[in-house]
Length: 136
Picture 1 (cartoon, one colour):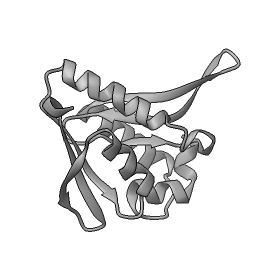
Picture 2: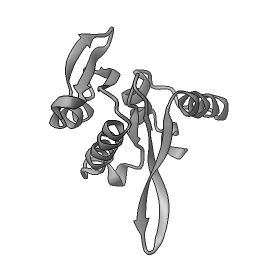
Picture 3: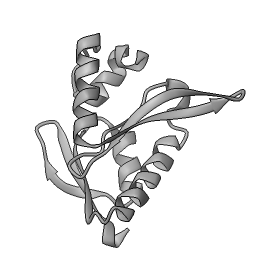
């Protein structure tokens, strides 16, 4: 997807300013699909749906990207996460984890914390978060 060519966005995702090539993009999506439920985040405009990001629901990590800058900071990521939290509860999961949010990714951290995620550990460049689903 085009947003993985944006080095500013990739830095929030991977902590490095290096755009994805086709091979890396395919490898990432293959990995996510094997380890969770991969979804496109789409927006409907003028009667047509188009992708603006992606998210994967997994018990081990909950990566989400709103890649199209027009739709960032609009509350879409929070709505998507609320939907996935509800889905995880229906699956009977007890908790959801975020492996790492970089310390400089304030918006992402605020989004997760607004939904009840709490810090569960430190990583080299940021923090891990956890949501116990029985408390949500």
